[in-house]
Amino acid sequence: MSGKQRGRPRSDQAHQAILESARDLLTSGGYERMTMDAIAARAGVGKQTVYRWWPSKAAVVAEAVLAGYLVAEGGAPGDTGDVEADLRAWVRAIFGQLDDPANTALIRGLAAAAADRESDALRLYRRLTGPAREHLVARLAAGVREGQLRPDADLEAAADAVVGTLLYRALAHSPEAVRPEEADGLCDLLFLGLRRPAGTKT
Image (tube, rainbow, N blue to C red):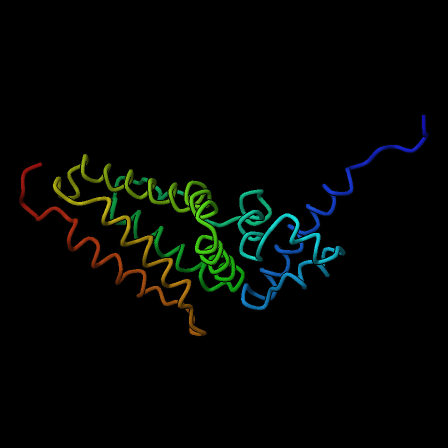
């Protein structure tokens, strides 16, 4: 028996190196500048090795996220008992993250991955967008139960409006910093339709 210790199989090492390479390139240079050649070079493998496992850079990004090499920030809105204040704070925080080029690069990469392969789109939705949307609907539903929002409000449409606006803002990111008023403007429109009119019975 050989005295050498067996380490991680070479294919596993290459697989990990490629995902780490995609993470580093995406966060440092952006999705548009990342190429399969650059991923392979940074990982120290041949380009054919990358293509053996993934058909495109979008697929590499999707796998990097699903494997935990890239983390999309998010989380559920807080619950202080004031649904409007909680949603405003949550939207402001997410808008603030869009000032970070690494975050916008990640979102653009995920959008490209979702468009590239339907299977990746479903997996990414289940991991990222779906839970965020469910958190929003749940927080709005609590607002309805607490008598702060209209009982006939379309909570699903409201959540779609928030998520869709955030995704659009990331994909259409401009050099100007995101202003807090943009988040507040979105919430103003949202609660104009959701807020229970003063004086109505609960």
